[in-house]
Every structure is written in C-alpha cells, then in structure tokens.
Image (tube, rainbow, N blue to C red):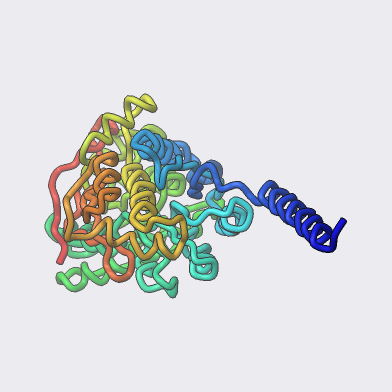
Length: 408
C-alpha cells in the first residue's frame, strides 16, 4: 500500500471511530422530558386533610383541561403531588423533593400561610415560582422572594377589613377578638382591630390561642370576660369546631354574637357543633363567585360542587401553563417573568383554557380572567380585589351569600 493509501485508510478508520463515538454519545444523551412537571403541595393528612383531596382534584381538572387543549409546548402537563401533612417542616421537605428530585420548575401551593412562609425562601434560591391558591396572611405581601411567590387569593387585608366594616354596619361598637397563634390568625385579628378602631369601635380583649392546646376553657373564659357586642373568631376548621363547642358548653353562645373568618366557613362545622348553635354566625369571605364552566365541570368530574379556593387552585395551574407557553421554554425564571403577561391587562379577556392557550400560541396578548374571578397581579404577586362576600349560616347548617362589602 502506498503512503497515500495508508493515509486514506487511517483517515477512514478514524472517521469510522469518530462516527461510532458520536453515535454512542447520542445514544447515552438524556432524552428530552416527555412531560412538563408541575409540583403541587397539598395537606392530604393532618388538621387540614379535609381540603387536601378537593384541592388535589382541582389541580387534576386543570391539568386535564390543559392537556385536552394540546398541552404546553407540545407536551402534556404532569402533576407531582406532595403531602404537607399540615406541617411546616414536612412542607419544606416536600418542596426540597419537588425541586431537587422531581426537577419541577413551578409549584402550586402552599395551601396555608404558615406553609408558604416556611417554604418561600426555597423559591428565590432555586429560581422556582410558586402560586398559592389560599395562603392569605398579610405578611406574605412583602417577603423577600425575588418575585417568585404569587397568589390567586387576596391577602387577609381584604377579609379582615370587610369583617370589621360588617361588624360596624351591624351596630356593634365593642368587640373581643380571639385568634389562633400563627400568621393567619394573628394577621386577621390585627387587621380587624385596626379597621374596627378606625371606624370608631373599641376592642376590649384580644386572645391568642394555641390550636394544639388540650383544653380551650381558659381561652374562652378570657375572651368572654368583657361584655363586648361581638366576639370575632379567627380559626381554622378543627380548632373552630373546638372553640364553638366550648363556647356552647360554657354558655357563651347565649350571651354573645359572633363574626368569624373564612376558616370557620365549612358545612362540617354545623354538623359537628350543631346547626342551631351556628345559626346566624357568619362573616366575609375574600374569594369571589366562581365563573365560567368550572363549578359544573368540577361537580361532573368529582361528584360534588367545588368549595372555597378550589377555583383558585385551578387558576394557579392554568396560569403556570399559559406562562410556559408564552415564554416558549420550561424554565422557572421565564415562568415568573411571564405570569403577569398572561394575567394582567392589556390583552384579550379570556376564561376558557383552550381558547387562552390557542391565543398565546398565535402570539396574541391575553388577560386571563380566571375560574375564581378576575386575576391581576400587582408588584408583590398579590391579586387585587376590592370586595368581599358576606355570608351566614342558617338553621339547617347551610351557609349562603348575602351581599358584597367594598373595602377601600
């Protein structure tokens, strides 16, 4: 063989080797993800387990609607559900798993304010946005989150102020306040007190209670120690039941009127405490009436109508999907940067998910209205709302909405 022939043979062998290596590397390269994963933090166990399944179901419905409309970036959405067990530490561990192991670039949750407060620092650190459907504590407004925390329910500033206005309109001029010892309860109590006193009322007693305390007798004795016109209660379902049972056992329900937060708005409370005891008890909720086909779709899919915040869960998933489609890439920072672009005006107002996704794919600016009402994110990631709905339990243990109260 000539030198030229030898060289050609060497080059040929080398090309084959390079090609073989290239094919091997291609074969070993990670395959593109077949789905786009979104994390979902829900309390499937613990004190708030009764809302865990409905919240998870709302996420399921949203993802089914998104995927039926062609998914996002040509791929289906996959939900990774993690149980927070109604516990801050468990929630932090769940968030770590979602980010580090499941590699999600967006999360829906946490359900409660204390879970959101426990996990929000992970967001900026890992550049993963989270939308909470129901964490309403006012202190979440100005946390140092690098704009990675959003919520589709309004802050407690609206609800608590509306309850104070309701108290004043009912003719109450003195009040005593009892709050569970967390950001939710203390925040509600503080805002109620401030607004009620601005209106000219006087708060006589404020009690902060431990929701895990074995006996509520001392708390009930303290909050009823002054002859206030109304006792304003800031609780969640389980401790709300315990409080009202104790109010009844100690004769307090016979001597006082009550106004409560939305944490005590649940059909299970009159069933457990007694419909006659809860009749006339009410307050003001921070969430508007559901819109579009969501209520009927949810009931058809799961056999029961949606309740508080489930429309907000649905909207949280839809907004993330729309932001991904708008960004053109599945990336946490890009999702964050496009959430306002799909939720805020200007743009075509749209509620239907399939229509919203189609418009975004066509390059049309949209203003997603939401199954849970109009969504417009402010600079803090909060939604702006100016009205709360007044509600009240009847003698059968059902509650109904009566009217709206506007809060400046």
